[in-house]
Image (tube, rainbow, N blue to C red; front, side):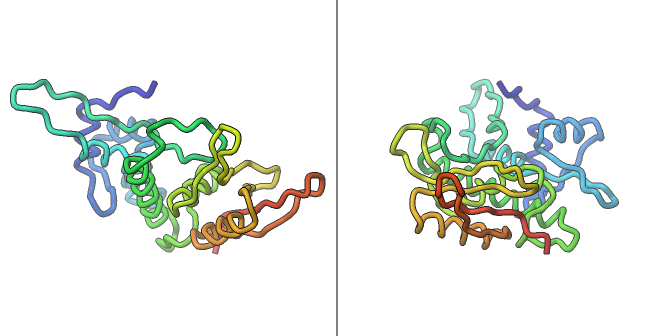
Length: 216
């Protein structure tokens, strides 16, 4: 289970710059958020700290928490855990459906765009950043889910996209239930800054999209 945030950590996240996600705090406090995946240290001087997509999600979860009644003990704000994009084929928990999930995905995608802006050397948001290159499956799945594509469920007949690792460096395979859905996934990934092409598996003859993050 994810350890709840401390009161000090919640205050730090809540006080982050609403536009950039820039954080202010002691080195120990900021390092603790980095270890939890809620912040990152900018590689260029002055090496400020900023919220990651998970950090933006945690802040949104705090802002959506209902205020307590006067005299009622304040419950710890939810961290929202570490956001996990649905890659397809996993069991679908109730929390992964509906308006709440839509907001969660939208917040994570906005956080990802901000992470691109802060970490790409030219501040570009139209191509993946270093974090996405080290989390290929999650990054591609987030781009698809944020664009409204539906992931496949674990039960038989629950069709949708599936994102999988490949032996190739910096590449994922995306499967979809039919040619139109597969092409739509490719178009979405291309629009999110990925190179995407359709291929056929030699043995199964199954079509798939091979996608990798663009560098330029």
